[in-house]
Length: 338
Image (tube, rainbow, N blue to C red; front, side, top):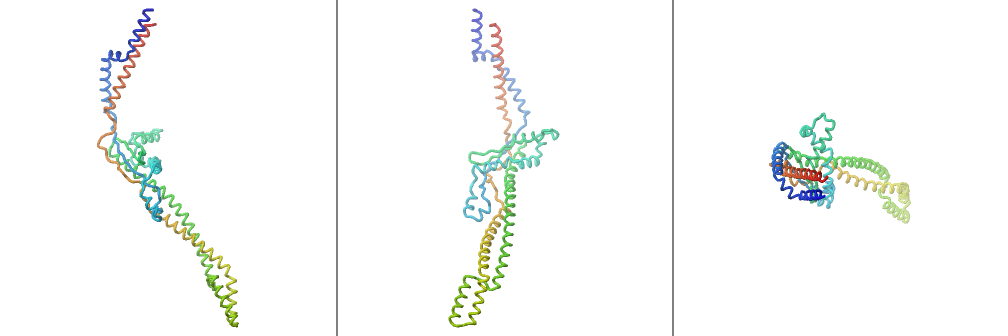
């Protein structure tokens, strides 16, 4: 029983971690030195990576035609975009269109040393792309493009190309929509124009019959007719009576046609205005971003941070050594108690 108590006391004494670590300080120094040397050598075999960053602020989504034809739009187009515009730009930057273009232009599959015969080559390429190229929104709603590459020139060129593609991709999306809208409006305008021309031809038929302004004409002719009757001018009264009958015969049709033509011409002018607005959007485009910082060639590597690798590796080795030796010691003490 006494041995057991003494054993438990010994086990308790070995649990004093600080004392135990001090007792194995020589082993720890040896392990720490070896870990530091090995990690230092290993860090030189890690590929160097250089970082290039582009910072840009998105603009508002107001169309160019709105800015040209409205007073409010001209002021709105100068505003910086907010959170919504920044999120939209990040969605565009994450699109397959931009990723595929960059991968093709820079032959990233070969650049990232991915075998073209690998059945998962597209997956590996995507993972490498997302690991080396990423996009984020800053607290001030700017958009940041970060590119890491073993070649500083390549990192800067990729970052700037992606920034340019953000504009061209958005321009294509907006122009495709603007062209569709313009084609629809232009088609409606052409149809409306043909209808108005037909209505105007019909009005010419009535004007050829002497109908120009039914309300005024009928009032003037009736007044002259009344004077002719009062003056006992039978010949003049007969002529005016014939004119009254003619106006009465065609007058109501003329009024309906005239009002309908006026309504259709108002719609024609409205369509013409929309058509002009839409045409501006198909022919011109304003940049969707303000470039704050373009990507520049990095003068210093970003990765690996060798001192950090050495420190982490050494500390990890020391902690692991302490855990293993402590566990071994406790196990040996535990066996003496059995």
